[in-house]
Image (cartoon, rainbow over all chains, first blue to last red):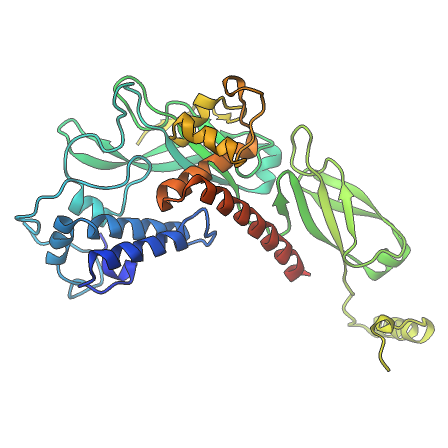
Length: 311
Length: 99
């Protein structure tokens, strides 16, 4: 496992006071909260910040951690805590409740206690619900998709030890889902005395090179040739739902928005596709093409900068 | 490692107790969210409230912000509104940057 420098994660000195640590944690939590920061690394950073605070806020745990010293001398490679590193320290096992565990480093050092760790819910005997995410492509939303997810969750063994267990769950994402919707997998949450909890998966769309989703609508830039823009007419446009025929008006402008009703993400009602026209020029590579453009330049009285004014 | 196949269903039209379970919150908290206009149920009385689509995702976000950052409901309401505004602007910006 990898050594975690909790002081570095929070950006505080090793002799930081409890107040400084709390302040640094709050700042980091705000900055990296996955609901606020959409960056790819934000979620991992948020988890690290929480893990660091979980250790450094507790005087006993912090003292035991400090005992380990700094980054191991030959930093690269796998880290092994020295035997009896926690001699004389009494801390209760920590870690996030439910969902996913912290890093292997944390789990090995601080979570060896017994008892329920977020898994069991007292009273009802039903296990806790778990939450996760499933990423699908926009094309998947048109057709439905099957995914196999790898989940990692803490499991309390028969002798009270907690281990991280990997399991695979297959999930069917039905046609017509949109980002932000949740799929429930009954009985796939944490196990409980009587029944397991449910697993809730939030659907997210993977970034698409062409389409920008907004609710059930899709936006894209549609490239058209100068003559298509000038003369108008029909163009065939590929969409995730199949090819559609789009009528371009005469003298279409770059930036003009066209609506394809009901061709967006499926549903009742289905979304729309909004295509923003983008006039692209053919590259002049042949003598004929050059002559053609030269003729246009000569014959067409066109000043694209007429609207700029000035002298 | 266990491989399981089972049916999945898309969450929609949750009742008040369902939504509470989903966001691991109590009823008072969810009712306050409704009173602050963070989420908007269908139905007239809390007994026949139905939460759909965007409300479910918003309630979950609100709960996480409240739990992870200690933001109260008025603060959560403001954060969610500003985040939505920001996201809309980011989308517009992305549109201009590709042209």
